[in-house]
Length: 238
Ligand SMILES: Nc1ncnc2c1ncn2[C@@H]1O[C@H](COP(=O)(O)OP(=O)(O)OP(=O)(O)O)[C@@H](O)[C@H]1O
Ligand SMILES: [Mg+2]
Image (cartoon, rainbow, N blue to C red):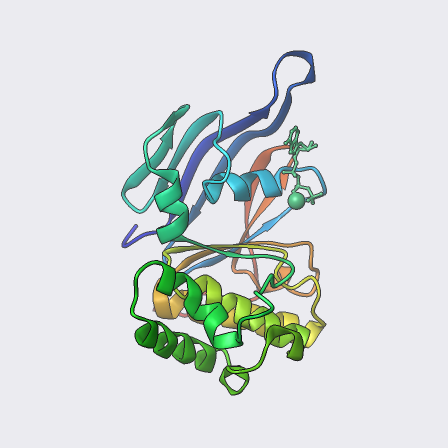
C-alpha cells in the first residue's frame, strides 16, 4: 500500500467485563487505500460506531491489529502510538450534523485547526479559501454558519475535516440530513477530495441513496465484516 491508508486485521472490542460484557466487534478486517472512499454499512447495533471510534483513536480495541500507512497503532491489546497526536494530525472527522462554530465565519471555521496547529493565520486562511473554492462554497466564506443552507454547512464541515490534510478521514452518516441531489453531491466531493489529496476515507451510512455509489463497501453484521464490491463504478480499463 503506497503512502498512508488503513489496514485492520482481526479487530475485537469488548465493552465491560463479566456477565454484562458486550462483544461489539468480534472479527473486523478492513483495508482502505490512499485515494479510496469505502462505505461501511450495517444494521443498528452491529458495531459501526464502535469501529469508527477505534479507527479514530477515540477508544482502544481489545485485540487485533491496526496500521495507518506503515505505522502500527495497535497490536493485540498494545497501543503503540500517541493517540492524541494521531487524532490531531492524521485524522479528520465529519459528523452527521456539521457542528460548525457559530460565532466564527465560514473561513475561520475551516482555518481554525491549522492555526491552532501553528500555521500563520494568513496562510491558514488562504488554504481554507482554496478548499472552500474546491467545495463550491467560497462565495459564503465571510458568512456565519447559521446563514448557510444545510448542504452548504456540510460542505464547510468537509473543508474543515480536510484542512490539516489528514491521511485518514472518517465520516459518520455525513449525508443523513441532505436531500438526494445534495447527498450524491457530497459523495462526489469526497471521492474527488480523496483522489486529490490521497486521503483514505471511510463513510458510515444507512443512506440508500448513496450506498450504490461506493465501489467497495464493508457490511458489518454482529461485529463481523464482509467485503462487497459495488457495480456502480467499474474500474477503468488499463
Ligand atoms: N459504551 C458502551 N458500553 C457497552 N456497550 C456498548 C457501548 N457502546 C456500544 N455498545 C454496544 O455495542 C454494540 C455496537 O454498538 P455501536 O454503537 O457500535 O452500533 P452501531 O452499528 O453504530 O449502531 P447504530 O446504527 O444504532 O448507530 C451494541 O450492542 C451496543 O449496545
Ligand atoms: Mg452508530
